[in-house]
Image (tube, rainbow, N blue to C red; front, side):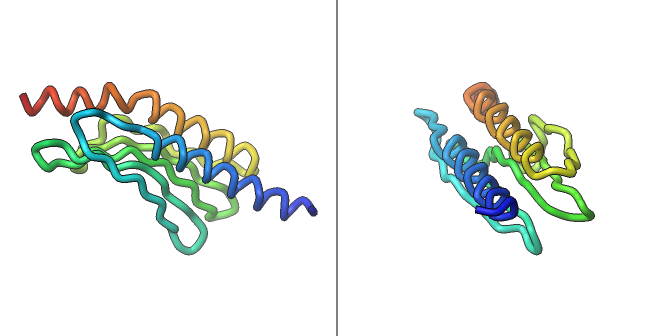
Length: 125
């Protein structure tokens, strides 16, 4: 496999890891729905949407885009547009470093998921 093919394989593996990590999140009192969207012309967003008992949605998502000569990585947790956890948008020149950050952001969101869902549930009661 040439270096471009290895980079493409790394991108697919990184996306699969992040999607799997976020899709595995569960909470006993809310429904969840994992998702993956393509972001034209060259990007992807993966995450999970938790539907709270009052109908509001809590979304945890990471995205990776190629634009302006760099890879842009973001991570966010929001409830109905209110940002609860915003990881800084970073522009990274190399795909391997961007994938490492993408993995880190997915892991950070996954690690905060229980606390964020519980916090939203506490607001309902």
